[in-house]
Picture (cartoon, rainbow, N blue to C red):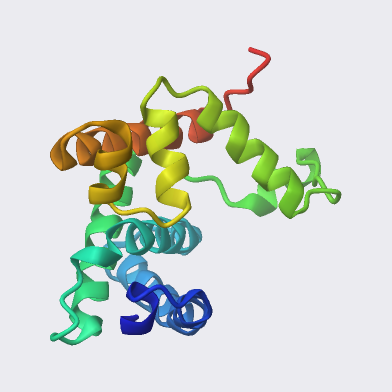
Length: 175
């Protein structure tokens, strides 16, 4: 992670690849501990990876990374449990016959879907998300967009909440 923060993209990719199984184990353990379906663990892992990407600049390189990651997993698990509330989960085996799999989905489709969701954001949120995905930190975005760092962080947080809501609701740009 130290090399990644210094701008080494390969080190960042290696870090994310190496840490994902650990994050998955923590999320599965948390789901077991709190009685959440194991299927929620993968959603938590994805949210953790996004949070790590967006907040990597907040990690203190003089401290161990494990507790920092564990705190993010814990917080994302709590968020997932709060969102879940008292909903009832139906095992997939009961509805598998009515589900259709999109076997043609690939990375290009996923990127297109992400871009369509980002395009639904209002300025400057759309630009902030794009800059964040390019690895820009709040200071760089603030300078580029003539905003304060705090305003950039708030706008990014709100944009990510909006994207998550759009994604969960299955909103399509044609609607």
